Image (cartoon, rainbow, N blue to C red; front, side):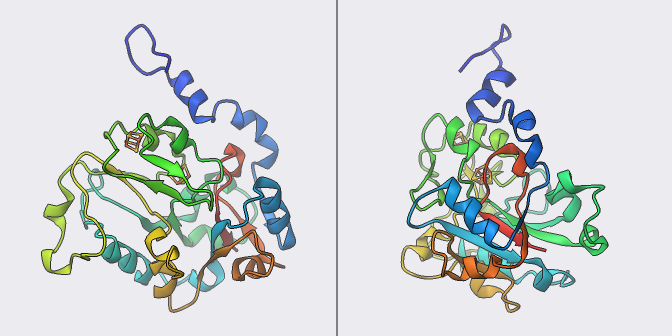
Length: 265
Ligand code: SF4
Ligand code: SF4
């Protein structure tokens, strides 16, 4: 990768490798992508012809207004041994709530429904169809599976944090301190590995469950059934049907990352 005279990573070279350079211009037409009903399926089919294309649909009409509810987040973090660290600098997040204006900055000042501006949206790794985080990783510690899940191998991660710089959604966290020290030893899920200081981590779409025919733990935990998970390549799947006839938006479509998390608004 190109470096400048100060031997620092060239930002231009980095963005080029991440595939984000020029997208703000090329993607200007997609600055506000609102897909309606069957257009979700059409757009999805155009992006990938894979037989299995895992996607999540968050129905914000069911989630909005339940500000005190943390069921999906608590279940995910418990299942994946995500430490609860209060400091903003050190916190680890796989799934969390973000004010609408932060989650969809490109829609700020628009004329969507007024209540949306006051709504906190559930956000997580988007398991992008075109993930810049994967392209910049020098050790192939993060990669995209054929079914679309963007994986992490914490043993291969050298902690350079290039992937964090490349992710435009802040979906990755870095273990600045030993995460095991922040876990309740008695509550550790022995079926999922803990991590060490100096590695990056993020949501894995519960690949360890999905591969055994189970739903992601956040989907199971939501009593309102606001979260759905399924195969977007199958027109008869739950996620395809859910989007049919509804308005769905994705985060930062202008960047060309093609997120696989859709929000029904
Ligand atoms: S949301 Fe970020 S971490 Fe997740 S696949 Fe997209 S670019 Fe990578
Ligand atoms: S921090 Fe780890 S996963 Fe991210 S780019 Fe560096 S080696 Fe790859």
